[in-house]
Length: 237
Image (cartoon, rainbow, N blue to C red; front, side):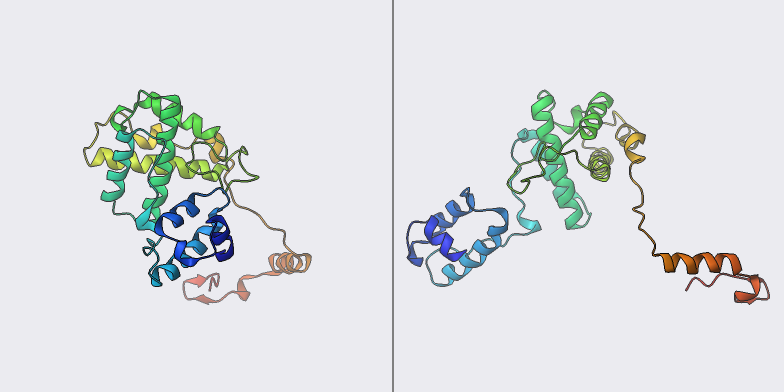
């Protein structure tokens, strides 16, 4: 990556890797998402040499600015993110998904810009949009979606989006930021058709293991189990 950075900057000198140069490198089309960590490390080295400012450490406390949503919606999401006591990771996930909801509003319902304007009708429209959503819809960046964009999202992902939406609106209502115009648990529930597709992922059991299980099931007797004066019990541990 250092060599590529110098080539993109059109100079072989490290002294020319200024703070502005690193900003351009991060935004350059040739810089993929997997290159940003390498650029971060390179900027730290160049900063130690005194040629640029030290980079801001990427992490949960430096989430990207929400783009594509109405400023009023963005402000509500950021307010929720700053108020919630959920773990940082969960808060970051819900923030990202609510940003997605904001872009959906901007595209399909531009007249709705704040959580307090949502009704049961809005919830029904959002549930339907999530059910038909594809990878890459209403996202801020698509550079990491090569080969996957346009494919339907998984049923479990749909459930996660709706769960995040329920959490967001439940908190907004409980904190009295918005009026209680609907019940999030009912209006934003996972459709039965989606829930039916979420289940265990069974694995194939080897023939020898299956034979042992079958033999044990056919021959297991009460005398094979440990017991007390109250009777026999299955040894779970």
